[in-house]
Length: 223
Image 1 (cartoon, one colour):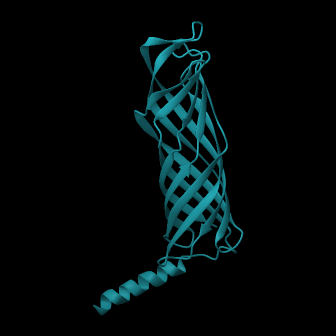
Image 2 (cartoon, one colour):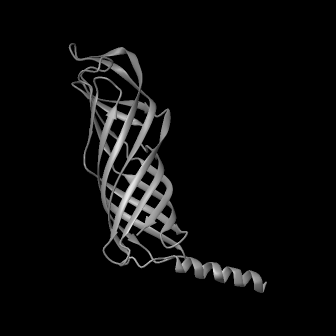
Image 3 (spheres, one colour):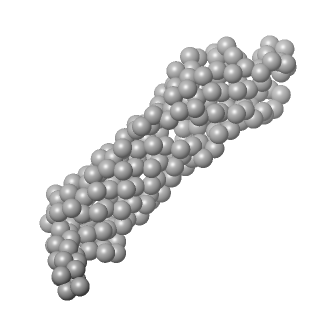
């Protein structure tokens, strides 16, 4: 029993020693593998007859990535900038057809598939708590994001507004410089689509509050 207690004590002491002074080592970089999950799978179309809701089925997510660079302005608070790449392959868009000339809905329901890529640009502040256990430091963050969107739906253009982003994470320090990282982010993301030259849905404009949750695992480097 004494051996176990001694080993546990040594482990906690070594983990505590692994935590660096953030004022003398002010930079921290996180590099993670990520997956984005859209919380809303419906897209609302606007035509001259009013609005219609369509399904926007996400068939397959592709693994993405997250790179975050932070600078400690004191022992607990960082200013951060980050970006990433998240992609969805085989998104299937289903909606009732619309004729902009006669301004009537068609009896047919069109369904098309394509790929979409998202590149968020994020600025935020994070608060890094003191260790809940030696070597384990949780953090929370709040900031703003703008996301660049690219799609393979020919004739469709997408744009987004500025939105908020909230962050929750945990660093598990291996030594003074390196840590394992787990991170969860929520993006407030309203996506606007212009289908004016898209043959399947001509004359449509759309809005979709994707509001994705991004789950990430990776490494942190503190220097």
